Amino acid sequence: MILFSLVGISIISSCIKDDIEPCKLKISFSYSYNMLSSNALANQADLVRLYIFDKKDILVGQYDIPGSSSNDNFNIEIDTPETGEYSFAVWAKSNSSTNPEADFEIPNLTVEKSTIDDLNYLMKRNEGIRKEALNNFLVGFTKANIQQSAGTQSVEISLKKVTKKIRLVLLPYSGSSNPIDVNNYEFYIKDDVGNG
Image (tube, rainbow, N blue to C red; front, side, top):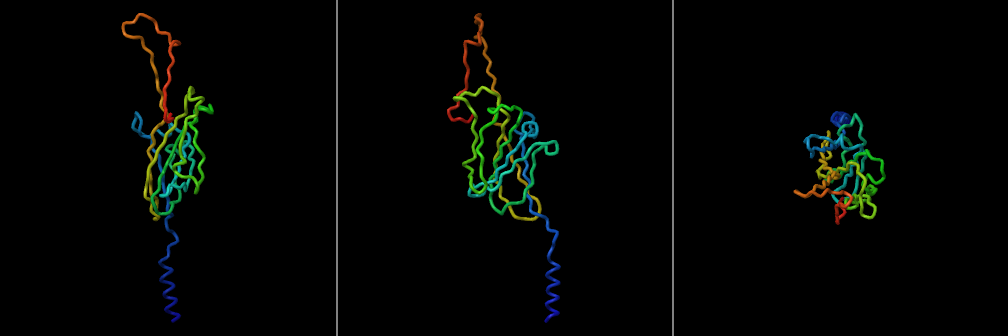
């Protein structure tokens, strides 16, 4: 009886591996929706913030990925969350302007408390007027089914630029001999919804 027990224990222990690959999730970001059709995120952003929401839209993870020469595309590798469907929301911004009004206003979210509906961004304005240049601001969103399995799974999130420059040009009416004085005109862009 003791001999059978020892043989059984030795068989079971030979089946246990200590060198199992950890479960990892590699998240990469791409800003290819541009004139060059190549990933230009490193040229457009200095910081990427990633939010991960579970199937109930509760925030389960938040990560800041600073830009650097060693992380040109802002990739991040994290421990794989539990098996399930997740939403990945991301924003990226540049820090080229230090003016406090150059960035969008983004709320601080709390893991295990905030929901995806709490994630929004607003343009900082003074009485509805925006006169200063904005830092670059890009956003992205995707959903993915994640499995708890050995190895590395990948999720790629595509971003689009929210901040664009609009140039208004005042030209004289064809055939008019009267000079145009730009000081006689006032231009503005109205957005009732507040999306910028």
